[in-house]
Image: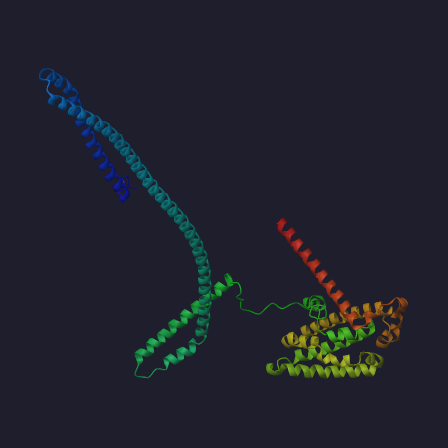
Length: 456
């Protein structure tokens, strides 16, 4: 910041006024000095006048003395007036100087205030600029990170796409090489060059394919599946999955219509379950045998025809062998043909696996569904009728009559249990119980895994 005084218009006017006041004071001082000399001369004049009066005694001298006395009085008055004027001028000069000093101090204060305000604004602007710069830097850093991640993803996608194109080109290279060799006879050089390019291209593509295979095997990328067949489940895993893990009634919630309508007693539920197992086993075995002969576009109609034919055979057999059970099951026995469990296992498993594996899957799914039916029918029969397995002799023969039980009087039963709402309630409790057991087993496995990790 410069130390030179600021020559503003206000300070210039104050300097001019100060110079004028000083000049007036000097002129006034000179006038007072002249007046004092005149007074001294006037004071010495009466002595001269008295001597002249004594010597000459002239009247004219008296008149002159009077005139001189008048002049002295006038001089004294003039001196007093000059002194008063000098004081006033001095006071005026002092007041002007004080006013000039005040004006200059005020001007300096205003200039200083303006400088401080400008400095504060500059500081605030600098702080704001710093914050904005920091935010911009942070946002730029975040944007750079996002851009880098996006660039890496794009680069990886481009590499995969290039590798796929290279693989496709490698597969079509022999045909391309053959076409490249088919050049007119008049272009021997072009034919040789094209052949050389095709061979070089084939070698390059083979090298790229080898590098890609090594990269996938050494460091597989998330979301990219390794080539190869998926690992097949063992027969025990298939059986356990159908019985518990993927139970059709409790997990997949399939076959709800017969599950809620026929389970008013344990015997009816057991009869429908056995019929479902038979249809599942037969349909899965037949479809697994002929799966290579079925055209994929018409597989669903073929599955429906096979299942409906087998259900008709089973219905006729039950009607002929167990007429009482057939009367109790009624239309629900025929509706097995439309049961989602049978169609689902045929589409999801039997159409892609062999006979043995398909048969195990059918037995497991049928047993799982039958167990749910039997548990639901037993609970509803016990709560709603106070009995259990009534009618088992009609299904299994006279030897099963000993299993029929009357547990307590009908005065203490709940009729809602054998009505449709009761079926929904009991099924909900069974599903909740299975989920609770699965959750407990999962927590135990996680706790055991944590303990194993700590012990390592």
